[in-house]
Amino acid sequence: MKKNNNPEFLVHICDRDNLYMVIRRSERTPHVYRTISECYTREAAELLYEQLVNKKKKV
Image 1 (cartoon, rainbow, N blue to C red):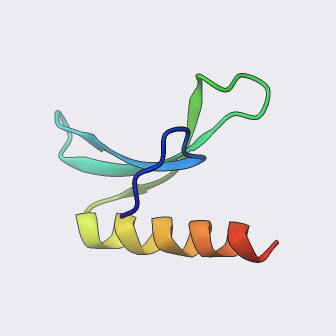
Image 2 (spheres, rainbow, N blue to C red):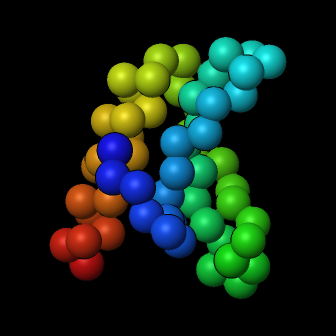
């Protein structure tokens, strides 16, 4: 995954549940992120992340 200083999308791991979450920065409150999806594998989370980033670039 590409790293960005102020990314709109992130993949975050919840260690307690061993769950990967794809999150998005809030437009109204830039320091707050909201969960888009919960994934059970890192691969699934990274695929979703890449799709979201590529979709955003096309718009």
